[in-house]
Image (cartoon, rainbow, N blue to C red; front, side, top):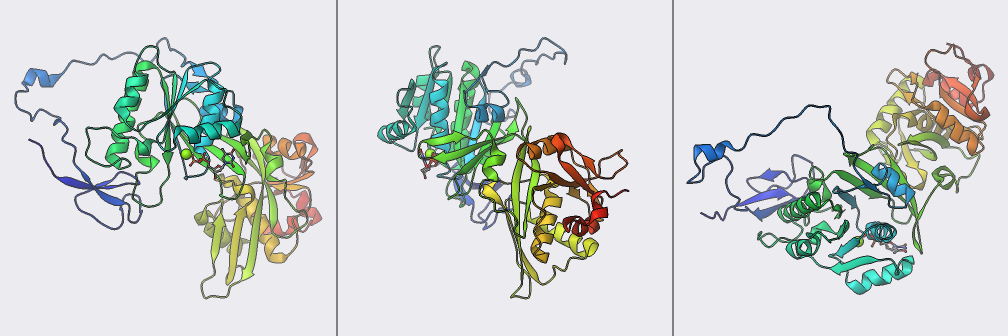
Length: 472
Ligand code: TYD
Ligand code: MG
């Protein structure tokens, strides 16, 4: 018996509700819940008539030992080093990869470049559900890849697409741009709803696994509830990458969020130009390119993104507040972390921040999640407050605890080496565990001024001699 019931699904995270409500309790999105018809799937668990007890019992699965001959997943190198690193060394056969990002950020551009590069070694197909053939061709021309052997189609029906790829001589790599435009006929819901997006992805991934086809699904991040966001697919795919960047900034970051075949904290850095995305081999130089030296409120953070050290400038502005509650605004960092850090600076370092607005910006549009950025943020804020620039040619890194202690962070040698490579002479850093303390010279001849707690930061910034070679 077909049921004509409907249910209410959050288009952002997929949570299901019996009735409509304004805000999703699972993901806190507003206006993301919309009505969808319930699919009449066959019931699981044997309620259906004619299912005997024996049939319900199923065929026993076979268990094996944990140690066994492991087949290394074969990988296809895309030929774009930034993409390969984020994927964990290339595209794995039969894997499903979701590439999420805001509309207009450059997902289609990236994937057209990737497919063009891959077409030299494998059969690749690009299915566009959003753009007409002519539009894609024009873009290919602009990117200088129109001679690449990419098989192009404009289609949105999943069964039609599968009919073309589910065959022994089918393509080895398929791009679906975007999954929100795809639909399967069996469902009544409109394309882009959670049910359609999930069903379409499921069908495509099932065939991809069986045929060993690498399936690249594009998913737009959506702000309102009209179409389902990529988050409803994250559990179904092997790899989730997000393509990020600020509109108006040329830099784009490809970030691994989930990867069954590699690390998840890697990033790839690109520059969006007239000729498409250019790989950035030396991101530190790019992020520091427009830096002005000797201005108050700026500090260079020696960070690590995945396997790579990366220097970025952190900028702070502290101004008297015109309102009762001071404003705190952050771009590129965690606002909760800033609130915590301001409290620590106030109570442990005696900085007078109450009644002042604090603005924080990570230059270049990068998002930093490493706790090691704490000390650099503190240095930028302290410098903004006093009006004294952070000493020149200096990088800063270290985690700050609630009692004001500066904690050691991993891979400090790699950070110092990168700083030396870019011509920095000094570093303000935590005391290293197991070491006696005192000033030391780190990788590449960078002189390290060690700070054990934020109370001493102001002194170190002021170039106070004893603090530079502070002992425990
Ligand atoms: P697009 O790949 O269409 O974004 P998405 O698929 O994520 O929606 O990128 C669109 C933007 O990229 C558009 O604003 C123009 C810009 N762009 C360039 O700057 N240079 C280029 O060579 C191309 C193809 C696009
Ligand atoms: Mg697009």
